[in-house]
Image: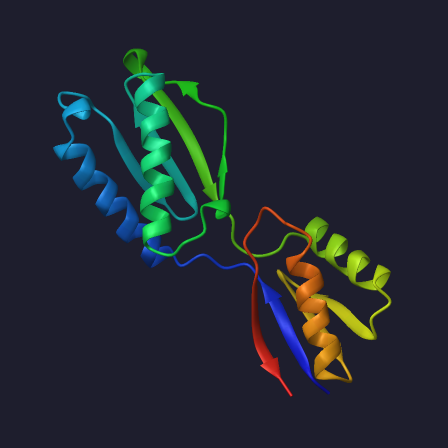
Amino acid sequence: MPSFDIVSKTDLAEVDNALAGIAREIGTRFDFKGSQCSVERAELLLTLMADDDLKLRQMQELLKVHLTRRKVDAGALDYKDPEKAAGNRLRQLVTIKQGIDAELARRLVKELKATKLKVQAAIQGDELRITGKKRDELQAAIATVRGLKIAQPLQFVNFRD
């Protein structure tokens, strides 16, 4: 029986490469001269440190640009509110989304059932397995999920006939 999995994975090695590029650019750009701006990653949490609000927004833009260059979807980032840090600086935490949470998985299952396609959806941890009797119906399910315009990047993997 044909099946495929819907997953949401972010390549952390590419995120590290993008962060290295950001650090290089911060060191060479004129508008960042003399500032103490930095970006650090600990597991799935990025920490943006900036001197003021303008530099924080520029760092957010740099983050989006460098991730896009490394072919990582910027929609995988969840920005928290900026907070005050020591010495009139700003700190912003950014989480990297990995996996499909239960709420999104239930929404996807509900949307697929509403289309009346002859496919079954099963939630398996942080991924979703879709099975059906025909390839065409699985491809229609992929088109349906893509048409939902979900903010989190989704990948369709492990397609088996």
